[in-house]
Image (cartoon, rainbow, N blue to C red; front, side, top):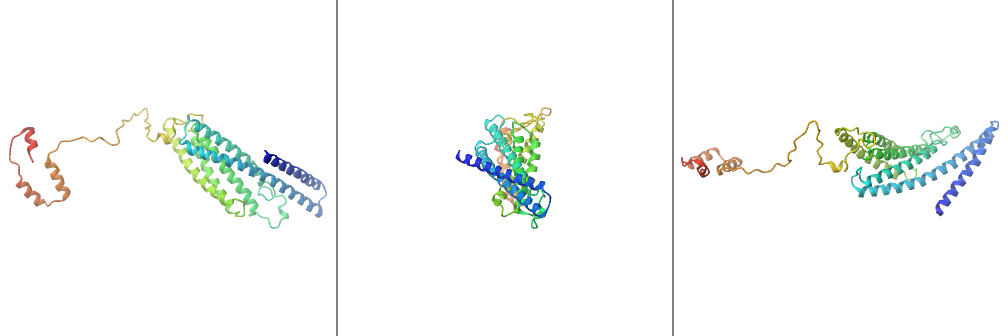
Length: 322
């Protein structure tokens, strides 16, 4: 509670400072242009941009702490819950967590875009002609662009998770969003590499690499679920639970057989049972000799020596031969 009160007081102070700076900018803008007036107006604009940047960064840092805590809880719950199911309460809880995380990333993305729109952030060019060392490769612009791409990738990932849940069944939409997630994560990694002095750039780059791999795995799962839904004659799209799979999810349905009703298939055992067949001992002798590659002349000599004389017939006589 004490931290929240101090944080609110800090935000209030930054709002007051921004209001004063904005009044100065408005006052100088109404004056006749001149070297002195332009210089003071530029200074006021820089102060206003600095105050706004500080406030937005504080808000982003607080919201990032909140969303990281939610992501940690979500990862722990997902690891212990096992395969999801539309009838499993754990799946409903996971969907709610993903929805909360996606909403937080919406707020973070708005703040990141507001930072990018500040002078020097890549979204606004006003006042840049006054800074001789500022160009398109400015580290501040790369940092702002990296934040936007990173948050877009994370938001896209959790929105895709909502579509990919068994209760929604929007597997095709999820696969498309996850493909976008991988491209955004790769672009964010490139932008982060361009600003090594950024605070936490190494951790953010590793997080984007991990997100890219996780999105690829979830994309494959979504495509597999879409194929299964299509086999069952369902849409596999975002039509409520129409495209959802039966309870258990794909991992629990690996041994299921999806037979088509119009073309029933007879099932057989994968390992056929062993049937005992009575054979004469001579059969095994010949087979053993063939496997041992006995000399042909030796086999003929042995056959002549043990040539069976005509005897009694019938079943008992057949078994007595050889």
